[in-house]
Length: 90
Image 1 (cartoon, one colour):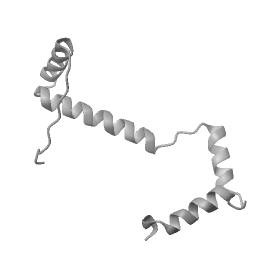
Image 2: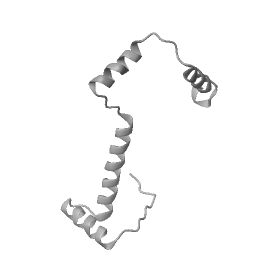
Image 3: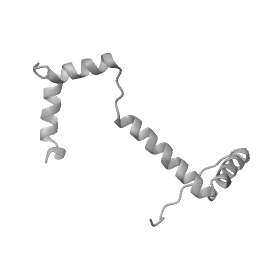
Image 4: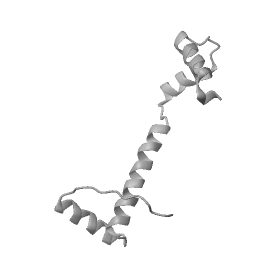
C-alpha cells in the first residue's frame, strides 16, 4: 500500500516513551505501532456502531415489530418519499 498521507500529533514525552516501549515489544517501529493501534481502535468503534446487540426481551420486541402487519407511520412514509426523490435512489 502506497503511503501518501502524513499524520502528526503532539504528545507528551511520557506518552512517547510508553508508545515506543510497546512498539519495541511488538517488534515494530513507533510509526507502525501507532498506525496499527489507531486502525484497530477505529475498526472496533465502527464495528460497534454497525452491530446491534439486544438482550432477549429487546430481541423479541424487534422480531415482533418486524413480523407485524402494521402500516408505516407518517414519519417513515415521509422519509421513504425523501429517499425516492434523492440521488441515492437513482
